[in-house]
View (spheres, helix red, strand yellow):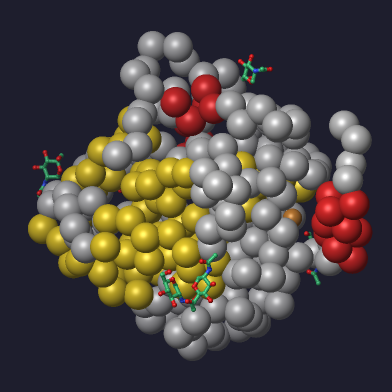
Length: 247
Ligand SMILES: *[C@@H]1O[C@H](CO)[C@@H](O)[C@H](O)[C@H]1NC(C)=O
Ligand SMILES: *[C@@H]1O[C@H](CO)[C@@H](O)[C@H](O)[C@H]1NC(C)=O
Ligand SMILES: *[C@@H]1O[C@H](CO)[C@@H](O)[C@H](O)[C@H]1NC(C)=O
Ligand SMILES: *[C@@H]1O[C@H](CO)[C@@H](O)[C@H](O)[C@H]1NC(C)=O
Ligand SMILES: *[C@@H]1O[C@H](CO)[C@@H](O)[C@H](O)[C@H]1NC(C)=O
Ligand SMILES: *[C@@H]1O[C@H](CO)[C@@H](O)[C@H](O)[C@H]1NC(C)=O
Ligand SMILES: [Cu+2]
């Protein structure tokens, strides 16, 4: 591919800010230095000034899922099932030509994550190629309530080193549903999980993993009868499950 002046400038800017990627800023992810309305740190933890770094890069795990495993002591947001929520991202990062974004919820302290929204292919861009850093969508009306749910954003970048990003905000959800079923969060480019190459302009790269993600059911915190874990990601996508379509 021949690069024009704009692309070269973009590459130089990226090289100069090698550790600057993307991060969620609202709701405030665990310990995020750029977060908005962040809770107080849990004892023994420090502000994350590397808040936009991936949790895995080039086959090496840099951090655990969620980046940090100790929750915020108080919630970063309080939501009601069925309401509209707005998720803001940093505007100083590198969007890496987009990629696969998912927003998920965990009701078991981060063992399993069920997807509630996806932007697959050109996350951070709209159809006209403008940046999108603020996503607004509806929290499904039938997600269970919880005093200690985890809201996660995960991302597989389209361009650059093969990376997996994940930010987690601890949230309170008001809701009466007992359970919620949806696709299991897809994990790629993290040790122990499948890898996908740079997209090279093909925004269907890795899409089969998302379309074939197993359906899981999560339960209100008080009801742990139906445990599931995120360790069940298949090495190859099963061909039998129906594709998940976003609404
Ligand atoms: C920040 O994250 C990058 C990965 O993107 C890592 O290589 C670097 O060591 C981290 N820096 C600090 C100070 O943790
Ligand atoms: C996101 O919202 C902020 C605050 O309103 C605004 O400054 C920014 O331009 C928005 N970003 C995009 C890409 O719309
Ligand atoms: C978050 O996004 C919403 C919707 O675009 C916008 O109104 C709000 O100002 C944004 N907040 C920040 C801090 O960017
Ligand atoms: C894009 O990637 C998908 C998934 O790997 C593949 O099936 C498809 O053939 C590719 N399309 C092109 C034009 O290379
Ligand atoms: C817990 O959830 C399961 C599956 O939805 C349901 O069968 C069971 O009745 C629930 N238990 C309680 C105590 O609500
Ligand atoms: C679910 O997890 C809890 C806590 O780890 C455990 O006590 C319980 O036996 C598990 N239930 C099932 C059905 O696996
Ligand atoms: Cu990056």
